[in-house]
Length: 130
Image (cartoon, rainbow, N blue to C red; front, top):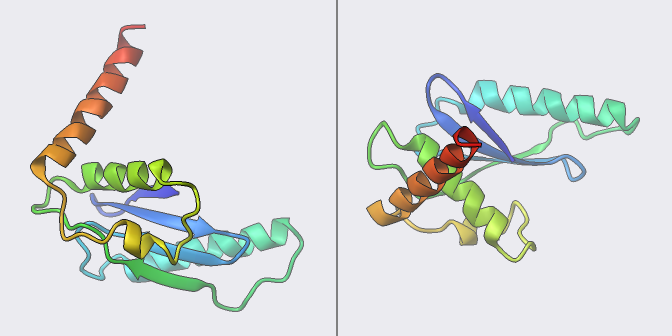
């Protein structure tokens, strides 16, 4: 999992370097981040293959996963954290192809995102108070 802030907007990329597959999860998908970010991921996969001394494919598999959309311009980070939490909490059998069904809903409720905010705040508070 690679959470990344691209032009003040958080996206999540799931990469399986052994299968040379990558998927972008963008809570405000408008296609703007596809080109440059896809090139970055492609380069990372080439470097991985070189380090493993294996011949990679000419073009890796790239997909954009339909995920719950953020309702405004300010919640992308919390949406990305919620995607990661759902992926980590699943039964562990998820592949890039099966992420479609795991995250197939139009949006998250305010309560869902508030839970992520609270969990994040609790975690940060625990580290501050140590």
